[in-house]
Length: 172
Image (cartoon, rainbow, N blue to C red; front, side):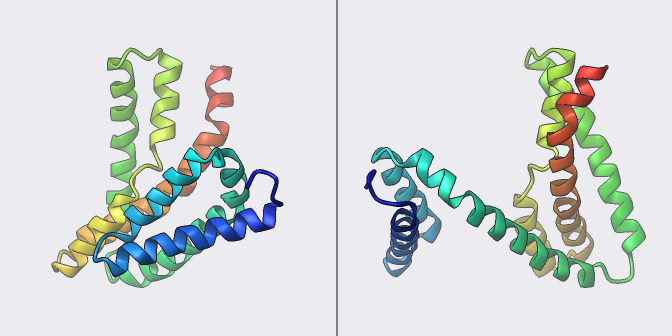
């Protein structure tokens, strides 16, 4: 497979991953576990770096489309309380940064590394989307709204902090 061109590797990787996920689904198991195992097999074959390079644009496009779809649904979900939701999201981010910084410092990181760790942890929270969906299904609309909006705000904010954080901390 190492001598094959990029297109066959990309096609085979996609087919293998989707096929494994479908097989696991047909067996009554998690599609995610099937897709994960196909990645483990690909890594075991020594194709990890090549597949990561080939699939990076596909991954980025899928992530953009996912957040676009979730964001479009989230705007209609805000209902009549956008001020409360935005205030809670801002509060969550303002609490998250110093707590992440303190966790880094307790773990032995320097001041600069603690700040960078806090920056890098901002976008981590995709599970909030699952919690938000559960909260909405359970009738806790405000919790769901805050959870979803927090992800939609923290992912682009985290990308900016991830990109410019090292430069900002070097200047100080």
